[in-house]
Image: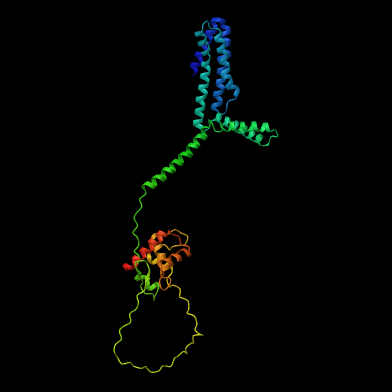
Length: 344
């Protein structure tokens, strides 16, 4: 870069010397390339110190070589030389801007911050805050409208060129992609081990505990409970024996004084005990149930009364006690329960 700037200065000196003499050429090089070299050193030093460069320095890096280019162009004799003479002084600008850019990137790499980008971001945010406040509270409606439009234009510049902000956004996106990939791989490669279902006890094993005096029910094809009628034994031809009179211990009660029959006793087995015997978690109302839990609940409800409940009665009690389950699943569980009873 130094060689490029020096070659541009020598070319400018040679071009102007042929027309205006050595003194004028030396002054032009000093005012153009020399001053540009000074500004380039200032810009390089500020960049290495991590400080933003003033606007006047950046403008001087382009204005001074441009003036030298115009002076060189006037010294040319033909259009070809005019173009060459005009481009020669701009070598110093390219050298200064290249050195400053490289130094800025080195500072960003070492310190993790870009002073130029931070200065621009601060200016944009400050202007945005000002225009938003003026758009909200200025008494003149036209001024408010101009500030509102200006704030939208400034909003597009927020974060532009901020290297640290870009790195942070990339880190955030990288974490999200990593989490998504981890969830996808876990879903694909997680092996679910087959769990052997617990052995459900037969109805003959639970019936003595659920309803001590209830007979084992049977069902017809339409899922209707049928109770077998007891067949009276045949009478033998024997001589009747008249028993001796027995004095009753308790006086008989007349029909008017007969007390109502007591309510049926509560079932001796709770739902938790039925679930424990089956080997499943205690079913809870308002919680989705597994197929085995559905069978446990229906078995408990079926033998909670004497005689055992039918499907419609058990389904009604199932809903009234707050258990949830689709009608098809409840009916399927009821069929499985009856199949277990018939197998037993």
